[in-house]
Length: 189
Image (cartoon, rainbow, N blue to C red; front, side, top):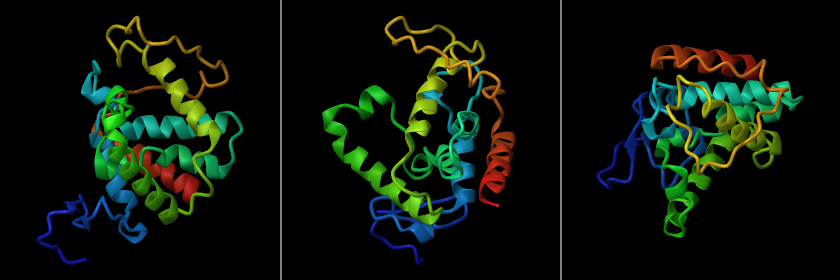
């Protein structure tokens, strides 16, 4: 794709001129997703150690498997934050605000392109949403991730079925990228 002067594109790690407002499935790249998510820190960077969205995504996929989720659900788990590779993330309180409806629509369009590119079936499965929410329970009590649990956060009970699968390591970007790609190959062949 030629680079245009319209300013409505971003340059990805692989050199693609990607149009996040008009995403095309054929422009979505697993390498770009892995690279970007392995360099983005959870909680807008407010962690004690670097803890990437890529590592989080691998743990979500493993958690979905631990709960008996289908291969499609596990794939969704790995790629559930795929839009953030092209859009970045915004903290949840801001993202949920009514004035951020446009952002949520762009995110939805990007996830549709990711789903199409990787042949993810249906909408994001319930087990993915459940495990993603469960990750907050694990991340918020891990002393390497969060310093002080916000007393206003609702206490999420950890599902004991997930404990053997959720092992946060706070991988640095190169290791998080490798773990993400290894899990991608495991799930997608």
